[in-house]
Image 1: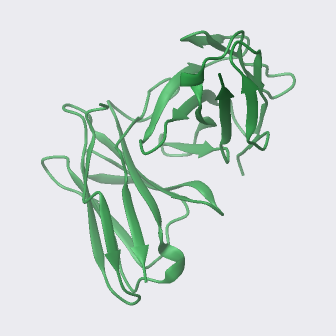
Image 2: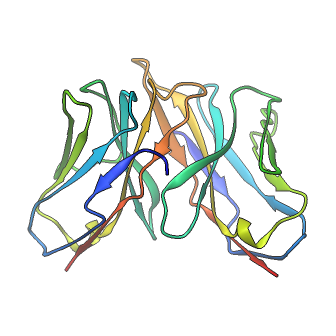
Length: 115
Length: 115
């Protein structure tokens, strides 16, 4: 158990809908990272938040957004869903900025299926 | 941009065989290098890491050496067990301007160990 929790575990929805994925980092961790894992794209970094502020963006679509709240939990919002958004979404946390040696701790993931 | 290239799997071995999973990288700066492991149905977890050239990371019998001259970080284990069956991801973390680190992952290599 990494100490990172994600809800829900599974999510099935239809094209055009909007969903929210939630992540609670390990106690004391200030950084939250979001990733998308799909068979064709592998593991793609989406976005990084540190202590409530956005710090880095990766391959995140404009239809996707995220935020980190004062209690440090984070939400990833996916809107206007397409079939191709079906994937596993992971969040990870680290104590500080994932610098030279900082380890990221991954949650168990949310499996999103868009029908 | 940064990239990580891993050998394609699956790699299929018999128990007690020697394991090598190749990983090479491209980075603009001086990255830290990581190996993560993902067991079925779980999130990724750190296996080992190295933060500078010639460092060797090791854990649970696995080893990898940071080779700057060949831009490689190959994973090795002398004697694999059935319980090592998993997907292995090579990753790097490199600093972008503004102090935040962008993680880049390889596509993952599936390892299957038979009794």
